[in-house]
Length: 170
Image (tube, rainbow, N blue to C red; front, top):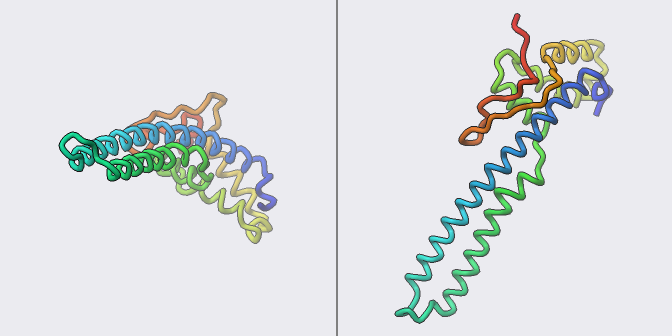
């Protein structure tokens, strides 16, 4: 990190992005639980159908049944790891959250993304105008003391992003 990383305006931006990122992470885990449950249900039906097809006159599926059971367990484990555990372990990067906010709020014009990219560059940190740019981006954002509310919607997107991050009307 550069000397801009300790700039008060950048710290304020980073704190807000962290809060939004945590809420987004929770949304991804809830979405993952629904998708994992659906995948487990679908794999159960497929496994039951496969056992029904390969069973011999009600005598059971034999060794092929054990293979189907092992594949079913593997599919269920994969669904849980992919859809629930992975969002738990992977925290969204601040750049990803900034792009998400900018795609939902009009008027930011890549300001958050630029602030993060400026703070990460060593050669730009020596520029005397960089702190002023960060201050201007932070001034565009009104930070309210209330918590960040997310409205979950269908799919992978957020219907409404934080009430705490808004753009001043010019």
